[in-house]
Amino acid sequence: MAQILDGKALSKQIRAEIQKDVEILISKGITPRLSVILIGNDPASVTYTNMKKKACERIGMISDLIVFPENATQEEVENKIEELNKDISVHGIMVQHPVPKHLDELSILSKVDIKKDVDGISSHSLGNLCLDTQDYVSCTPFGIITMLEKYGIEIQGKRAVVVGRSIILGKPVALYLLQKNATVTICHSKTKDLPSIVKEADIVVAAIGKPEFIKGEWIKKGAVVVDAGYNKVPGRDKDVGDVEFEEAEKVASWITPVPGGVGPMTITMLLYQTVLGAKKYGTARIH
Ligand code: NAP
Image 1 (tube, rainbow, N blue to C red):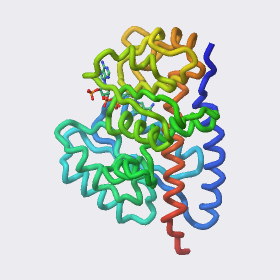
Image 2 (cartoon, rainbow, N blue to C red; image 1 turned 45 degrees about the vertical axis):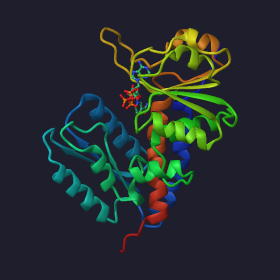
Image 3 (cartoon, rainbow, N blue to C red; image 1 turned 90 degrees about the vertical axis):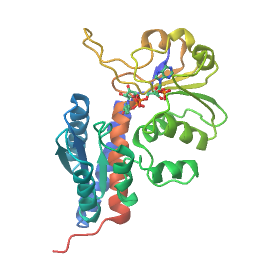
């Protein structure tokens, strides 16, 4: 039976360390501050942004939730980002993904000052991952790699298979695994014979958004399974991941639960990078 990669417990530990840094910064007159922009009222996005705000406040940071209506214009959103870029009391800016379809998401993300891109999904931050340099890393990939490292799971030399290639998850996690010297295969909706590719993986990262799509029988004995998926299933009271957990845990060596695996780690990395921004670029209040 697989051991559990407990993102919730690990997050608690890491957040306690971040909180100490927040206290030190506050004593120097810098309160780390994250501004989260939510456009529209997608229920999942509303839940995620509220979770982020509460997580910030619990460790003494300031968090502003800036909500635009579904029909907000590109100009309105970009003007707000420009304003936040100039505001020296703001250390991190994140735009909740996905934005309504009429907006140009890449253009919006690229407006965020690279010094405040604590969510790590601007083209600059993604480019940094390609160049093996590191400033801010996309938070879910950062959470996944941190979790593997903290649990002592070796990445170097391992065969990693990432299923999914989105810009917030699949692509950056694949690049980050590559940076950590894994041999990486990226799969997507046009990939042929996915089960046999997954079967070769020492590390499987599921980033698809389809409930229990990856079957337990596809997993190699002893593989590490990281399930980033988070899916609501009509008629079921519990949200599920992209992996068939009950079957996969019988063959894997380690596995993330859903919920309580990748999700909390993502928020923890957002807090971590905002505090990092406050440390690097924060300016003390003048009394
Ligand atoms: P996305 O943008 O919809 O991307 C899904 C990816 O899965 C695409 O690359 C798609 O391939 C691929 N895919 C779809 N059907 C497939 C199939 N039959 N076989 C192989 N690949 C297939 O989704 P996302 O934003 O990356 O999110 C993925 C999941 O992670 C969702 O459940 C989301 O809720 C969750 N998530 C969790 C966190 C967290 O903090 N825990 C953060 C972000 C996302 P194509 O490119 O070919 O279409």
